[in-house]
Amino acid sequence: MAQHLKQIAAKTRWHRKYHRKIAAALMAFFLFVSVTGLLLGWKKNSGGYLLADSARGSSTVISNWVSFDSLHRTAVRVLADSVDPTLSPVIDRFEARPDKGMVKITFKEHFNAIQLDGATAKVLLLEKRRADWIEKLHDGSILDYYLGWSGSPFKLVYTTTMGLGLLLLTVTGFWLWINPRRIREKKGSRGD
Image 1 (cartoon, rainbow, N blue to C red):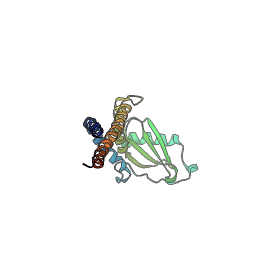
Image 2: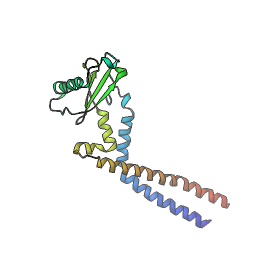
Image 3: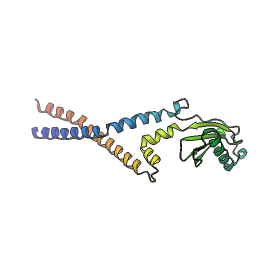
Image 4: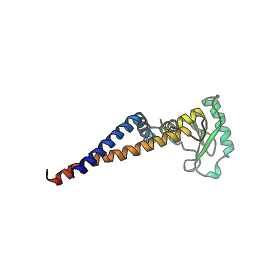
């Protein structure tokens, strides 16, 4: 019985050592991920600061909408005239919101978006996509984005490191929590 208790204690010391090393190595990254995760969790409740509210267009009947080509031309013109003429007009995606009568156009090389009325192509809202930027910080793809790396090599290394680090902290933390209980239980059953 005493030998078994010594083995449990030795394993606990081993888990404590590696738990401490992993936590120390990744502490700043975990802090960063937790803060950006909190911001992302609150993005829809930020009063439009992190994630702009969706504006309402004039018609929810898609057959009344103008063509995507017309929306594209309007977005590029508005970007140059009302936002910044030096920004790239390359579009990342069109997000059609039929229930709101609106199309949101986001751009590939910056964090601006334009919400247009689907039926009239009238500008409903110019927005800064702060939540997209925070999401790139959160998952590590911000470096891939700014350095122009394709295939997201940094993001893959970063998310793998963070995921494995959290998994190892969970496993070692479990043993740090359970082993003292096991030792007390065994000592209690010995009648000491």
